[in-house]
Amino acid sequence: MILITGANGFIGSQISSFFLNKGSQVVGVDPVPLAERPLLQVARPYKAFIHRDEIWDFLQKTSGISWVIHMGANSSTTETNRQQLQEVNTIYTEKLFNWCTQNQVPMIFASSAATYGAGEQGYDDQMDPNLLKPLNLYGESKLLVDQWVLQQKQTPPHWYSLRFFNVYGPGEYYKANMVSVPFKAFHEIKNTGSLKLFKSYRSDYKHGEQKRDFIYVKDLVAWMGELMQKKPQSGIYNMGTGHARSWVDLGRAAFAALGLTESIEFIDMPENLKTQYQYFTEAKMEKWQAQKLTASQWSLEKGVADYYHNHLLKETSWS
Image 1 (cartoon, helix red, strand yellow):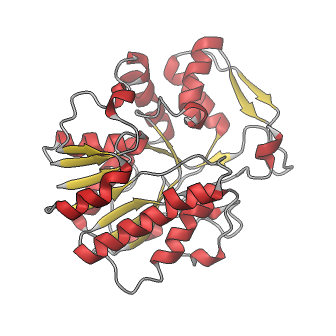
Image 2 (cartoon, rainbow, N blue to C red):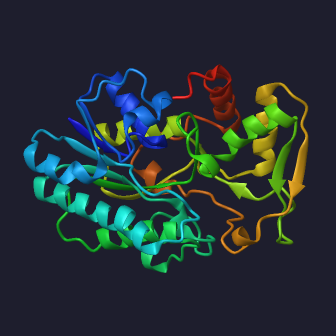
């Protein structure tokens, strides 16, 4: 039986679907009831679905948990409440890690590429986490866990802290201003015929040439299964393609997927973002590759085309 937190969220819902479709027994955990996000939960027969705050009582009374996949978090990179982020993202994860240690249950949990800050030290998952300086409180809340975990003498039999880079794909429709740019681009291009991207405020980057490591959620879901099957060395792992692509590349992929003529406009960046904006992210994947784990199967162009044609253009099949 697999326990998945954040099961009614973006990545967690896709992981839940993957394992439920394989016939696994899944316990879903989320503060948001299933009925509030019906597009995520069509015909998903959970063994049980419980509120985030009920998990400790549930675990005391339940046996047979074979894995914990902890995706639940406050994922807002603009959140300003440090205490709330530390309670939900840091302390909650540490408590789950301790439960998994005490009960010898393997654990996978979500960290973030936001832990790398502006990338002054690069994006190497083998780097000492104490050298990193996140640009926002969300990144800080995730980094605190990574620093804490590496200090623990007792751990679960297998554990994996996964630093997600720019994830996009089906299941994110409810995230309001936190949806991915591929999702925003789809609706903006469909509605206006053009796409707005932020200007660059650094001389070494032209407008639209800021780069991100865009990773399709279907890669992440497949990797979860692979981690559980192969059980590589425990530790912190980047979750990206290892190939940075520009916002212009993304825009072109979006227009191509929709069969429309490219039309990109550059706009001013909000002042509150300028001090915490990442101009370049690219996951170093050597540690992952050294464990003989599978490389990304979805290029930006292939992933955007699949997302649009097999999900967003169907409107009722976003999950």
